[in-house]
Length: 55
Image (cartoon, rainbow, N blue to C red):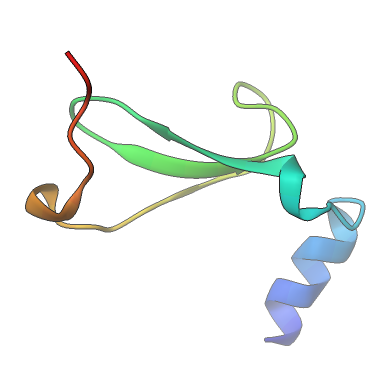
């Protein structure tokens, strides 16, 4: 827990709405501040558990 708290502090204490999720056909990840340049964390949900893409 201390490691996660340290990462949160290092990121500038982001608020709830500074985080989001991105999903493609082959992967999905959470990110903070900016989808292209912000820190990101892969999610490890099984393919069958993912929300299907619209289309």
